[in-house]
Image (cartoon, rainbow, N blue to C red; front, side, top):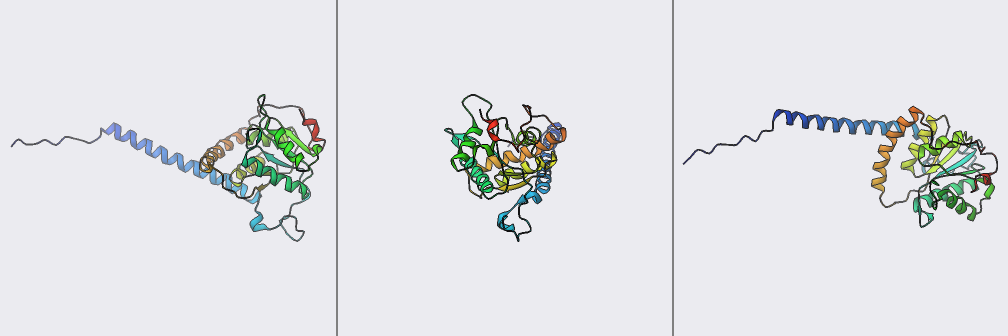
Length: 242
């Protein structure tokens, strides 16, 4: 019986070393992303109002109550479906309108996408608030809020916002408040009610990357896509109408 020779199945050293490098680089990348996310969330956490633990913000005996210094409520866009607010956007609008009606701030700033003909997110947002009883002159529209960063920097530079309340879902609120803080805007974040939305895993994963990106964006002080003349938030919101 012939001796059977065992084939050498060991990987070449160069290939093994290459795989090790890729594994170590992947682990390092994941640790970096996790660390940057914890940095953003840690810096923003104290600026987010948690009604479930801090109580009614309009109770005068509540030490965490809203101050009278907020100049507007920023509602960040979240997309349209058939020219109506998406479920996420509707929840943001409802929270922003309820804050306005409770006297948390005298103006609403709707910031979203109106970058192409036939898609006017901020007009839909404003009309939703008008239909809910908010006076048109108290509603401003930022037609070039194409990203969270652009919404916040334009709020500061175009609308002269100095002390806003920012409304969005909590997973997104950390980044919005962090950006505002980095831009020198003392924001207060208020999350919408905690609902389950389809595709949330994907959005949360995307948000982890976006937090890392916006750390760099704020450090570099990147300009927004569009600048423009100043429109004081203390004035008449109808000046932003199409």
